[in-house]
Amino acid sequence: MTAAADDEARMRAGRLGLEPGITVQEVGYDTDVDEGLRLAIEDIVGDEMVDEDFDDVVDVVVLWWREDDGDLVDALVDAIGPLADHGVIWLLTPKPGRDGHVEPEDIADSAPTAGLQQTSTISAAATWQGTRLVAPRAKR
Image 1 (cartoon, rainbow, N blue to C red):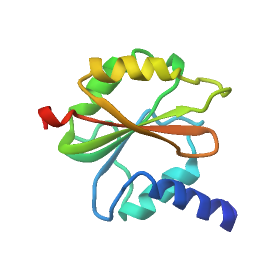
Image 2: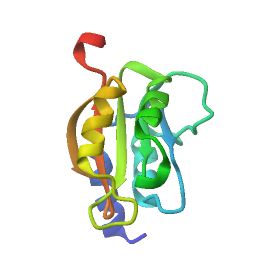
Image 3: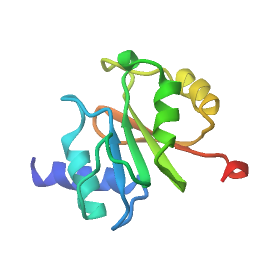
């Protein structure tokens, strides 16, 4: 990775609101994920992300999701399981025009069904967008 690409990945990872010392769980890893973003996340928190088999509480779930990955509601419900009370799920989906793109309506429909609300959407990487999902305040 070039220095410019490294800086760009750090800047984008910084938008995720991560802090040193928190535990980040990564779900849905595959060969198409943005490695620069992954490394920048780990750099910010100061540790590697834990995988899907981690059996303790996590502060943030990074969920890489593509259109053909299955049922989004089920994946979101599973992601909530290990999440701390004020935890956040970052749903990372391919940007429009990319293979595996997930329509915004699908996210908007799936999040409340899973007990989550969408708070923001960002450009998380060159080919990935991030949707921030949290439990509604009344449920916290």
